Image (cartoon, rainbow, N blue to C red; front, side, top):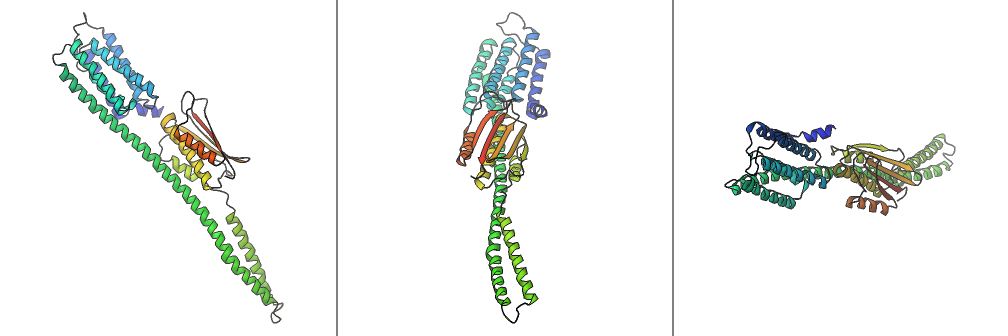
Length: 379
């Protein structure tokens, strides 16, 4: 709820509310001319109802710009119709400003080319209002002036949308780099542990074995046979060699890579959704390929939850099961209909299948996205 209110009352949206209020004030107290095609003055309650309906739809768009595009487009088209209806009922010079507020919304629902087509059609209709309904002597000048304001407002809004998208893309790329860095650091630690175990085995083990052989030969020398010091040295060499072998075995007995730091780094740049991570103590991956598959799966879940589901929370559970690992990802989005996998989900499935695993897609009871992936223990 707090996020919704924050989105509704951004500085730009608040300026739109003030503009709407100023237009309503002028309609009520400034006086509205009556077009020639109307016999009498339009009822004040009718204009007021249309004006309030425009505000409701405006808030529905700016408060949920992440809603499905068809819904946003319908809301914007209805706003245009309401604005033209009020202009047909009252010849008030402030009413065309509503078209500028609509132009700001258009770039959120259409591509740049589609926005241009919409603005062109709107200004053709505006020319008809000026020329036929209002009976202006120079409708072309008025249309061009207001059209330029609409283009300016739409361009400024488009640059804002582009900046937000670039910021989101940069945040996702930064998260990817942070997670990859954590993963590489874990891989480097694993490789360094293996290198040290080899060095201990090859260097220290070799030298201690040679020392044991020399001590054994020395103990057979009649001059020192039965010497307590030589026996002590031989026993210490045996114990030290056994200890080194145990250390080498422990260093080579890797329990897998810890994915928690990489996954937490992946979610850090995202303001939403909030990541709830649960990793069982024995649920560790045994190879870099497995680690990357899990990492990319969670990354795709975060991206989908932020861009499409508009979820506030994402739950990720990595658990060990007989024969493999299971990854459960779900969010609290409010989607509807069957989930259609895009390139990201298809790539996730292909990566898991290449390792002998798989992926199931579905929705939660509340409409959120639910991803269930699994990997074999040895991939």
